[in-house]
Length: 105
Image (cartoon, rainbow, N blue to C red; front, top):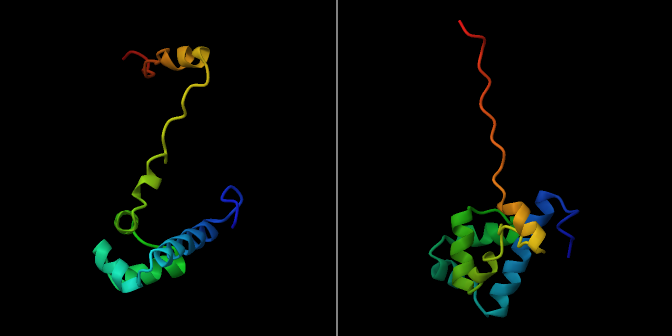
């Protein structure tokens, strides 16, 4: 299993496709059954498992069909403050500057 921090985009996609295949097999589903449950084509499932490449919408459909959609929940959340001081810093309004104006005409 590659460390995603040091993996290429292609390596991450291949790994995710492989993991989804393992999840499908653990549920004893054929590619055809998963495609039907996810309402995507068989080719989409094959391409996902082989190359790790599908649309975001198709990925979500497959995750929902596998009962794995909750795995998306923690993605891209803002980091929680670690201290009261950090909460206070985050609550301060950002300084906004006026746009530069040209010389008066």
